[in-house]
Length: 185
Image 1 (cartoon, rainbow, N blue to C red):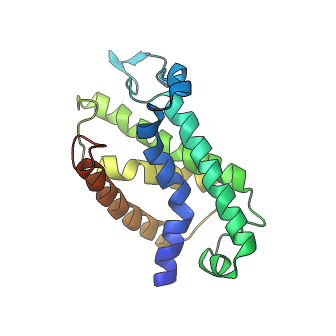
Image 2: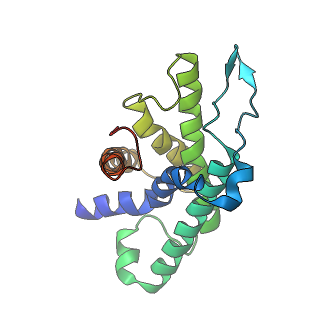
């Protein structure tokens, strides 16, 4: 069971960190020009498709974070028998880790964008909490896109969902306590 928990954290870490990266993207001066909305300010049924907070800057940074993390994971996998033992069934020698990082990073942000689309249709204001969907959207997106090259079992996906749901709640609360977030959830 401990090995399964470690694997769920290890496998989804690129998406988890990618999901958090847009918060920091606004603080990187060179990325300001990329702060354009993913939906190009287009509307659907009179409302913005995703909203102004889903930007190309966030997507690009999330993909970059996903690639950097999977590259580090690949390096650690090659050089550590312990990492190889806990990362099963994922074999970084045979999987394209750059593509995996891209899919996990993009999936996290695109899952969030789909959830934002739903929030706009339901007239939920941007930045307002929509529990539990705000906490799981990136998990579904990351798992869905990464499934194209890494297919896990249903119990593994369920464990990833549960573990990363809890991680999201804890990290959001820590972000609130440290002043990085305005609300605890």
